[in-house]
Amino acid sequence: MIIVLMGVSGSGKTTVGEKLAERLGCGFSDADRFHSRENVEKMRAGIPLTDADRRPWLAALRAAVERRQAEGVDHVFACSALKQAHREVLSPKDDVVFVHLKGSAEVIGPRLAARRGHYMNPALLASQFEALEEPRNAVVVDIGGTPDEIVADVLARLPKRE
Image 1 (cartoon, helix red, strand yellow):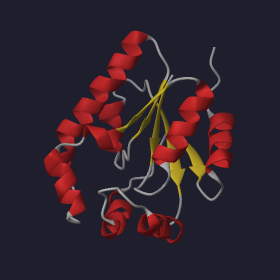
Image 2 (cartoon, helix red, strand yellow):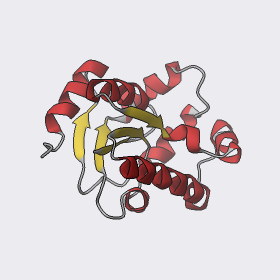
Image 3 (cartoon, helix red, strand yellow):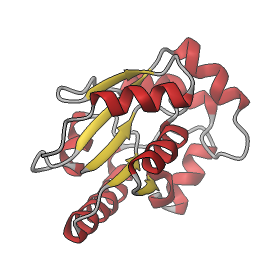
């Protein structure tokens, strides 16, 4: 099973993703590592990415998904996947489970402000919420709990394997 933890920056995708992958005994990849240097610099400067900026990034992520599928292994990816079009690139055959880590700007804002060592400018949070298109077919999990509670919630809601 390929799982993409999606949501705005600061929703806990990396923290929850690492813990979820550990619980599932599988690999984890953070989509942030797939961004070009130009994209990272734009975000650091507080400039929102355009769909054109995201296109090569999403293609690289889809290629990583396909590699894991070809290997026949489970894998967890952390990726904002804010728009339906982004999710369609990542899962053109509906072959990925999306988990939307959902929270309010009031919850996420302080997390972003406290985060150290990450290039994402907290000023971009509003643009992330503006770009977010609620997913149609995703597991939706509230991020109000601790990371361990969120992981337990995700695990309880994942589709059962045959």
